[in-house]
Amino acid sequence: MKHLKVALLQLMPEDTIEGNLRKGLEYCIKSRDMGADIALFPEMWSIGYDIPEDIDELKSRAVPADGEFVSSFGRFAKQFNMAIGITLLEKYDPLPRNTVCLFDRHGNNILTYAKVHTCDFDVERNLTAGDDFYVADLNTQHGNVKIGAMICYDREFPESARILMLKGAEIILVPNACPMEINRISQLRARAFENMAGIATVNYPVGKPDCNGHSTAFDGIAYKPSEPASRDTLIIEAGEREGIYIADFPIDEIRYYRSIEVHGNAYRHPHKYKLLVSECIEDPFIRKDYRR
Image 1 (cartoon, rainbow, N blue to C red):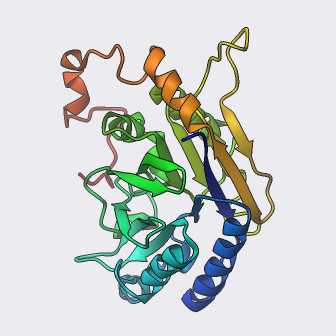
Image 2: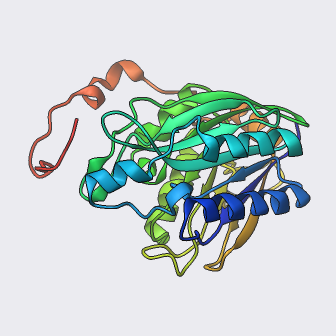
Protein backbone atom coordinates (compact mmCIF):
# COMPACT_ATOMS: atom_id res chain seq x y z
CA MET A 1 0.00 0.00 0.00
CA LYS A 2 1.91 3.03 -1.25
CA HIS A 3 -0.33 5.90 -0.17
CA LEU A 4 -3.35 6.87 1.94
CA LYS A 5 -5.02 10.16 1.10
CA VAL A 6 -6.96 11.89 3.88
CA ALA A 7 -9.17 14.86 3.02
CA LEU A 8 -9.07 17.38 5.86
CA LEU A 9 -12.48 19.08 5.65
CA GLN A 10 -11.70 22.52 7.08
CA LEU A 11 -15.27 23.78 6.81
CA MET A 12 -17.54 26.41 8.31
CA PRO A 13 -20.58 24.76 9.89
CA GLU A 14 -24.16 25.67 9.03
CA ASP A 15 -26.78 26.81 11.56
CA THR A 16 -28.70 23.52 11.61
CA ILE A 17 -27.94 19.83 11.71
CA GLU A 18 -29.76 19.49 8.38
CA GLY A 19 -27.44 22.10 6.92
CA ASN A 20 -24.39 20.31 8.28
CA LEU A 21 -25.61 17.02 6.81
CA ARG A 22 -26.17 18.61 3.41
CA LYS A 23 -22.87 20.50 3.37
CA GLY A 24 -20.99 17.53 4.77
CA LEU A 25 -22.17 15.20 2.02
CA GLU A 26 -21.42 17.86 -0.61
CA TYR A 27 -17.82 18.09 0.54
CA CYS A 28 -17.48 14.32 0.75
CA ILE A 29 -18.31 14.22 -2.97
CA LYS A 30 -15.65 16.84 -3.64
CA SER A 31 -13.16 14.84 -1.56
CA ARG A 32 -13.89 11.69 -3.53
CA ASP A 33 -13.33 13.59 -6.78
CA MET A 34 -9.94 14.70 -5.40
CA GLY A 35 -8.95 11.07 -4.86
CA ALA A 36 -9.35 10.89 -1.08
CA ASP A 37 -9.47 7.53 0.70
CA ILE A 38 -10.87 9.15 3.87
CA ALA A 39 -12.85 12.35 4.42
CA LEU A 40 -12.41 13.69 7.96
CA PHE A 41 -14.60 16.31 9.66
CA PRO A 42 -13.64 18.76 12.41
CA GLU A 43 -14.78 18.16 15.97
CA MET A 44 -18.51 17.73 16.65
CA TRP A 45 -19.61 18.58 13.10
CA SER A 46 -23.28 17.74 13.79
CA ILE A 47 -23.64 20.96 15.80
CA GLY A 48 -20.54 22.84 14.60
CA TYR A 49 -19.00 22.54 18.06
CA ASP A 50 -21.63 24.93 19.41
CA ILE A 51 -22.15 23.38 22.85
CA PRO A 52 -25.04 24.83 24.88
CA GLU A 53 -24.54 25.45 28.60
CA ASP A 54 -28.10 24.35 29.42
CA ILE A 55 -28.21 20.61 30.10
CA ASP A 56 -31.68 20.08 28.64
CA GLU A 57 -30.74 21.90 25.44
CA LEU A 58 -27.47 19.95 25.31
CA LYS A 59 -29.37 16.67 25.44
CA SER A 60 -31.91 17.82 22.88
CA ARG A 61 -29.19 18.62 20.33
CA ALA A 62 -27.47 15.24 20.67
CA VAL A 63 -28.05 12.52 18.06
CA PRO A 64 -27.54 8.75 18.36
CA ALA A 65 -24.45 7.17 16.80
CA ASP A 66 -26.76 4.88 14.81
CA GLY A 67 -29.29 7.60 13.93
CA GLU A 68 -30.12 9.16 10.59
CA PHE A 69 -27.46 11.90 10.65
CA VAL A 70 -24.59 9.46 11.16
CA SER A 71 -26.11 6.66 9.07
CA SER A 72 -26.42 9.03 6.10
CA PHE A 73 -22.63 9.27 5.97
CA GLY A 74 -22.36 5.49 6.23
CA ARG A 75 -24.64 5.03 3.23
CA PHE A 76 -22.69 7.64 1.32
CA ALA A 77 -19.39 5.91 2.15
CA LYS A 78 -20.69 2.70 0.61
CA GLN A 79 -22.20 4.42 -2.42
CA PHE A 80 -19.03 6.32 -3.27
CA ASN A 81 -16.46 3.75 -2.14
CA MET A 82 -14.62 5.97 0.37
CA ALA A 83 -14.16 6.09 4.14
CA ILE A 84 -15.69 8.92 6.18
CA GLY A 85 -14.86 10.08 9.70
CA ILE A 86 -18.00 11.91 10.84
CA THR A 87 -18.11 13.74 14.19
CA LEU A 88 -21.08 14.45 16.41
CA LEU A 89 -22.57 15.33 19.75
CA GLU A 90 -23.66 11.78 20.55
CA LYS A 91 -26.82 11.00 22.50
CA TYR A 92 -25.63 9.03 25.51
CA ASP A 93 -26.66 8.28 29.09
CA PRO A 94 -26.37 10.11 31.46
CA LEU A 95 -24.93 12.94 29.32
CA PRO A 96 -23.93 13.28 25.63
CA ARG A 97 -20.49 12.42 24.30
CA ASN A 98 -18.04 14.09 21.90
CA THR A 99 -17.67 11.34 19.30
CA VAL A 100 -16.20 10.38 15.94
CA CYS A 101 -17.53 7.45 13.89
CA LEU A 102 -15.41 6.02 11.07
CA PHE A 103 -17.18 4.30 8.20
CA ASP A 104 -15.18 2.22 5.75
CA ARG A 105 -15.79 2.23 2.00
CA HIS A 106 -18.28 -0.61 2.40
CA GLY A 107 -20.45 1.48 4.73
CA ASN A 108 -19.46 -0.38 7.90
CA ASN A 109 -18.93 1.58 11.12
CA ILE A 110 -15.54 0.17 12.08
CA LEU A 111 -14.66 2.61 14.88
CA THR A 112 -16.64 4.71 17.34
CA TYR A 113 -14.50 6.80 19.67
CA ALA A 114 -15.64 9.24 22.36
CA LYS A 115 -13.24 11.94 23.55
CA VAL A 116 -11.42 10.74 26.68
CA HIS A 117 -9.87 14.04 27.76
CA THR A 118 -12.94 16.28 27.82
CA CYS A 119 -12.22 19.95 28.53
CA ASP A 120 -13.63 19.90 32.05
CA PHE A 121 -12.38 23.44 32.69
CA ASP A 122 -15.00 24.58 30.17
CA VAL A 123 -18.44 23.59 28.84
CA GLU A 124 -17.31 20.03 28.07
CA ARG A 125 -17.58 19.31 31.79
CA ASN A 126 -21.21 18.52 30.96
CA LEU A 127 -20.25 15.66 28.63
CA THR A 128 -19.65 11.99 29.33
CA ALA A 129 -15.98 11.20 28.72
CA GLY A 130 -14.88 8.17 26.73
CA ASP A 131 -13.10 5.39 28.56
CA ASP A 132 -10.57 3.96 26.07
CA PHE A 133 -8.77 4.41 22.74
CA TYR A 134 -9.48 2.18 19.75
CA VAL A 135 -7.78 1.01 16.57
CA ALA A 136 -9.49 -0.52 13.54
CA ASP A 137 -8.40 -2.13 10.29
CA LEU A 138 -9.52 0.12 7.47
CA ASN A 139 -9.88 -1.49 4.07
CA THR A 140 -9.10 0.83 1.17
CA GLN A 141 -8.89 0.24 -2.57
CA HIS A 142 -5.12 -0.06 -2.18
CA GLY A 143 -4.95 -2.30 0.89
CA ASN A 144 -5.52 -2.23 4.65
CA VAL A 145 -4.23 0.30 7.17
CA LYS A 146 -4.61 0.47 10.95
CA ILE A 147 -6.46 3.62 11.98
CA GLY A 148 -6.90 5.16 15.44
CA ALA A 149 -8.56 8.36 16.64
CA MET A 150 -8.22 11.00 19.30
CA ILE A 151 -10.06 14.33 19.57
CA CYS A 152 -8.65 17.83 20.12
CA TYR A 153 -7.53 18.09 23.80
CA ASP A 154 -6.52 14.40 23.70
CA ARG A 155 -3.44 15.47 21.72
CA GLU A 156 -2.09 17.32 24.78
CA PHE A 157 -1.59 14.01 26.58
CA PRO A 158 1.24 11.84 25.20
CA GLU A 159 -0.60 8.81 26.56
CA SER A 160 -3.38 9.15 23.96
CA ALA A 161 -1.22 8.65 20.89
CA ARG A 162 1.07 6.24 22.77
CA ILE A 163 -1.80 3.86 23.55
CA LEU A 164 -2.98 4.05 19.94
CA MET A 165 0.54 3.23 18.73
CA LEU A 166 0.76 0.30 21.16
CA LYS A 167 -2.56 -0.98 19.75
CA GLY A 168 -1.07 -0.86 16.26
CA ALA A 169 -2.26 2.48 14.84
CA GLU A 170 -0.34 3.57 11.77
CA ILE A 171 -2.48 6.67 11.13
CA ILE A 172 -4.24 8.69 13.85
CA LEU A 173 -7.22 10.87 12.94
CA VAL A 174 -7.70 14.01 15.06
CA PRO A 175 -10.90 16.08 14.72
CA ASN A 176 -10.28 19.48 16.32
CA ALA A 177 -11.94 22.76 17.34
CA CYS A 178 -9.57 25.35 18.82
CA PRO A 179 -6.93 27.90 17.81
CA MET A 180 -4.05 25.98 16.23
CA GLU A 181 -0.88 27.88 17.04
CA ILE A 182 2.78 26.90 17.19
CA ASN A 183 2.58 25.05 20.51
CA ARG A 184 -0.48 22.94 19.68
CA ILE A 185 0.90 22.15 16.24
CA SER A 186 4.19 21.21 17.89
CA GLN A 187 2.32 18.74 20.11
CA LEU A 188 1.04 16.96 17.02
CA ARG A 189 4.50 16.97 15.45
CA ALA A 190 5.83 15.38 18.64
CA ARG A 191 3.08 12.74 18.77
CA ALA A 192 3.94 11.73 15.20
CA PHE A 193 7.70 11.71 15.82
CA GLU A 194 7.72 9.74 19.07
CA ASN A 195 5.27 7.09 17.83
CA MET A 196 6.44 6.91 14.20
CA ALA A 197 2.80 7.33 13.19
CA GLY A 198 0.98 9.54 10.74
CA ILE A 199 -1.30 12.14 12.33
CA ALA A 200 -4.09 13.96 10.45
CA THR A 201 -5.77 16.88 12.24
CA VAL A 202 -8.68 18.92 10.90
CA ASN A 203 -9.84 22.19 12.43
CA TYR A 204 -12.59 24.73 11.67
CA PRO A 205 -11.51 27.73 9.54
CA VAL A 206 -11.16 31.30 10.65
CA GLY A 207 -14.62 32.81 11.15
CA LYS A 208 -15.68 30.00 13.45
CA PRO A 209 -15.30 31.46 16.98
CA ASP A 210 -12.11 30.33 18.74
CA CYS A 211 -10.83 28.55 15.62
CA ASN A 212 -8.33 29.57 12.94
CA GLY A 213 -7.85 26.75 10.44
CA HIS A 214 -4.27 25.44 10.17
CA SER A 215 -5.32 21.81 9.82
CA THR A 216 -2.17 19.70 9.63
CA ALA A 217 -0.78 16.28 8.81
CA PHE A 218 2.54 14.74 9.85
CA ASP A 219 3.97 11.47 8.51
CA GLY A 220 6.26 10.81 11.51
CA ILE A 221 9.28 10.00 9.29
CA ALA A 222 12.10 12.05 10.80
CA TYR A 223 14.94 10.46 8.83
CA LYS A 224 15.28 9.23 5.26
CA PRO A 225 18.33 7.47 3.79
CA SER A 226 18.15 9.84 0.84
CA GLU A 227 18.44 12.93 3.06
CA PRO A 228 21.57 13.89 5.02
CA ALA A 229 19.84 15.18 8.15
CA SER A 230 16.53 15.03 9.98
CA ARG A 231 13.53 16.35 8.12
CA ASP A 232 10.30 18.13 8.98
CA THR A 233 7.59 15.47 9.19
CA LEU A 234 4.93 17.98 8.11
CA ILE A 235 3.00 16.83 5.03
CA ILE A 236 0.60 19.76 4.85
CA GLU A 237 -0.50 22.76 6.88
CA ALA A 238 -3.63 24.54 5.73
CA GLY A 239 -4.09 28.26 5.91
CA GLU A 240 -7.02 29.90 7.66
CA ARG A 241 -9.60 29.65 4.89
CA GLU A 242 -12.34 27.09 4.34
CA GLY A 243 -11.44 24.27 1.99
CA ILE A 244 -10.42 20.67 1.44
CA TYR A 245 -6.78 19.91 2.15
CA ILE A 246 -5.40 16.54 1.03
CA ALA A 247 -2.84 14.81 3.27
CA ASP A 248 -1.01 12.14 1.28
CA PHE A 249 0.55 9.61 3.68
CA PRO A 250 3.32 7.36 2.26
CA ILE A 251 2.17 4.20 4.01
CA ASP A 252 4.90 1.87 2.71
CA GLU A 253 7.58 4.37 3.75
CA ILE A 254 6.02 4.77 7.20
CA ARG A 255 5.96 0.99 7.65
CA TYR A 256 9.57 0.58 6.57
CA TYR A 257 10.66 3.44 8.82
CA ARG A 258 8.85 1.85 11.79
CA SER A 259 10.65 -1.44 11.13
CA ILE A 260 14.15 0.06 11.44
CA GLU A 261 14.03 3.19 13.65
CA VAL A 262 14.40 3.63 17.40
CA HIS A 263 11.12 5.27 18.48
CA GLY A 264 7.63 3.86 19.07
CA ASN A 265 7.75 0.64 21.06
CA ALA A 266 11.26 -0.39 19.99
CA TYR A 267 13.23 0.42 23.16
CA ARG A 268 10.67 1.21 25.85
CA HIS A 269 10.96 0.00 29.48
CA PRO A 270 7.32 -0.23 30.66
CA HIS A 271 8.29 -1.89 33.97
CA LYS A 272 9.95 1.38 34.97
CA TYR A 273 6.90 3.54 34.28
CA LYS A 274 4.67 2.55 37.20
CA LEU A 275 4.28 6.16 38.35
CA LEU A 276 2.44 6.91 35.09
CA VAL A 277 -0.61 4.97 36.28
CA SER A 278 -0.69 6.52 39.74
CA GLU A 279 -3.88 8.50 40.41
CA CYS A 280 -2.21 10.74 42.97
CA ILE A 281 -2.34 14.45 42.06
CA GLU A 282 -0.36 16.98 44.11
CA ASP A 283 0.30 20.71 44.01
CA PRO A 284 0.65 22.60 41.75
CA PHE A 285 -1.64 20.43 39.62
CA ILE A 286 -4.72 20.13 41.85
CA ARG A 287 -7.86 21.46 40.11
CA LYS A 288 -11.31 21.63 41.74
CA ASP A 289 -13.08 20.81 38.45
CA TYR A 290 -11.04 17.68 37.74
CA ARG A 291 -13.12 14.55 37.00
CA ARG A 292 -11.74 11.04 37.19
